[in-house]
Length: 76
Image (cartoon, rainbow, N blue to C red; front, side):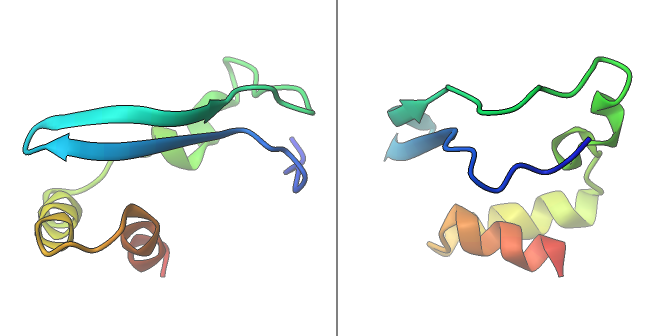
């Protein structure tokens, strides 16, 4: 499967309360084929996170770090 760089799909979430997130913006139109059920297991979003990674995500989130920055920390 080829990565499509010009795909405009996005979901923008806002944290409203301690345990409540709301969708602020959603663009759901893809400009490419989606992953087949067989190949979905290879997608980054389907990978399991270790307890250490989950704890780091919680720590960074509670410290006010934006989700995009948290994701970049996990990638490197």
